[in-house]
Length: 272
Image (cartoon, rainbow, N blue to C red):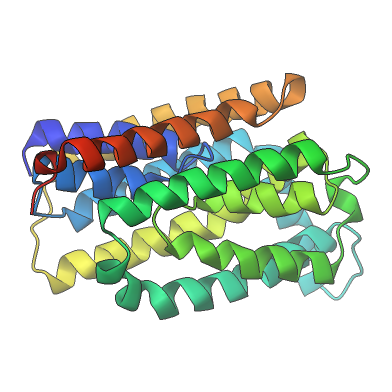
């Protein structure tokens, strides 16, 4: 994949991993539309590292609070702040099991453009309905283990290109009655272990494929993904404090609908 394509993917990853519009759908569509056959796993790992750093920087207060709580727990002291750590753990485990258990099976069967387009539209509609119909009665500190587990199980659906990991967490949280900023914040916190695991997984795939590490390209990818990701985080939190998730739902429906139309009217656009 040429360096220009790597840069495009780094920018896209920084935006689509954070906003509820799904990165995998965009990557799969670009690969099919522009015939990008090779996947640079090392660059993908660098992109995840950049986004991980962006999340840690933006959410430093939550990260510091959880670190202090964990240290108190390890010293045998009770700490109310440890509930957030427990909820993130409970929500992460089923998501990891479902995602990595089904990834190999679904990589081929559900990466056709028509399936991606349908999922983009369907979960755009679901996001809109959940956001508009969901009550706004809960804050993140009111979460319990059952709700965290429900979010984690549904997060596993993000293995399907077109669903969006951030998007499905926000959708379920809004359905459970959490306020928009709290739903987005929990989704971002839940992304921290996911980014770390994805970076390690991509690095392992790169080693298995015997891909060489280009230090300059990896550093550039991590830097661009991190900067763009930080800006995307700031925009998401700014937006949801003042508005709804309708903007993102409309984008998903518009993109999916345009793709369905293109596939129907101009099927030759997609590489075979």
